[in-house]
Image 1 (cartoon, rainbow, N blue to C red):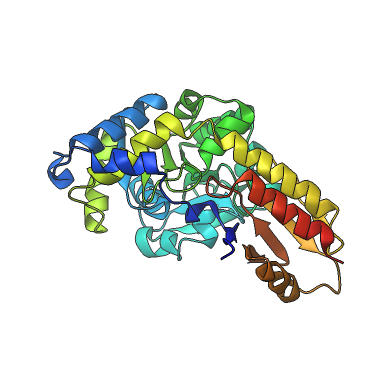
Image 2: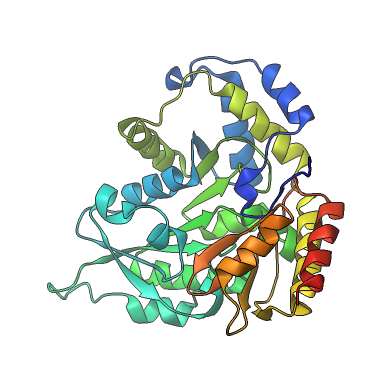
Length: 342
């Protein structure tokens, strides 16, 4: 039986055998009582990596983002983010539902915001007609922006705008690990820029479940209460935490392999007769568009014959995302299929 080559997302990864062994050996306790030693170790380890005071483990990145927004804001305030951002497109209207806030959107290329764009959206605090600006949220890497990465100086410039206007600055770092590897950046640099950071363990790092929210001790204390209200308190979550510890120790540097796989796919797509253009590739996300007259449905069926899965993102965007469960040999096979399409 031919194995499926699943390039829909890096969320489909499964724990490696070594990660599974670490999970089953993990000492555990009741985390709601803060008595799970493995989870305490993971939270401490992550906070120290980023030079931040504390961390909180949650089931998903959506929950960490939504908790952060709730802590930073009160109902009736405004969140500034990009029109392509995950918190705006893929979190079920959580900004409104959970926090009672509205959003103002930037529209620059690749899902990246700039300091002047943010500055232009900050509301006049003396205008009673306007919702007060309270929080800026950046995403790195950008999902709908094709895995694009911020430069640190651009993020520092946005932080200066936030400081000038008394705004908080949160990072949706679902694929921040990819940015760190691609740009040769250090986690501590991000800890110095942002008031809070969400980092995901269940994408490129290969964990089965989990994200972490990082911030000050005061911030995380408030976040823990909100997590409880959202039903996110877990008991013997140390089994999941052990996967996170293993991933932080063993799976970060290997992300460079996924980036190289993405470059191979990009090159094959550029020589594919069906493809009109491919967006620039910085990390592990490859977004491309078909030529006029070539249907996405027909393209999908052709790939399916070769047991290849991909994602349609809407607005004509198609996506490949290589990850640790797709080998270099499988990537080569996909490239051959693309080059043989007529």
